[in-house]
Amino acid sequence: MIMEPKILLALDGSKNSMRAVAYVGDMIHGCECFHITLFHVNAIPPELIEHGGPTKPDTGRRLAEELQAKQRKWRAEFRETVGNEIFNPAKKILKDKGVHETLSTIKTKIVIRPHPDVARILIAETKAGRYSTLVLGKRGRSMAKDFLLGGVTCKVIHNIKDCTIWVVE
Image 1: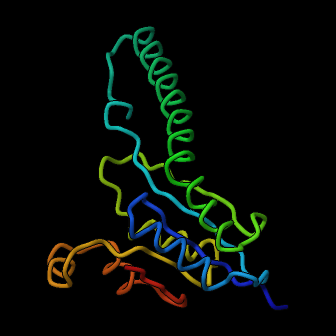
Image 2 (image 1 turned 120 degrees about the vertical axis):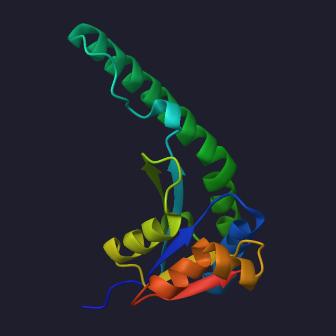
């Protein structure tokens, strides 16, 4: 059985990630054999991550409920913001390039860590979703800085297996 090729398109809202969207649109426009997943990673703000709290059960339960309510509110606001600022513009670019809207979906990964390892998340998502291609917008740093600082693109390229990678600048 031949599966349709799946593309994971990593978005962070940067100019290069939007260039990557346009590049994908140019590459596959008119072809309906691909499926694109627009993917964004974000971390819950540290102040919304659970803490030890007080030792009194009633106070602890109340704090936990307040924290959960704040997290729900943040998630709703996050979904709206990321939709308006990242996913909607990306979907419009694809549509303008002739990619039918049914060929793309959106997915977010919300991490409960202040500084998530985005490269590791992209690699895991690529593997779990059985994507044939991962598309990234290159960050505006030199190769030397990427090597020394361990940029996302550099980490992905050196650690991913069984997947084509398109890096768009």
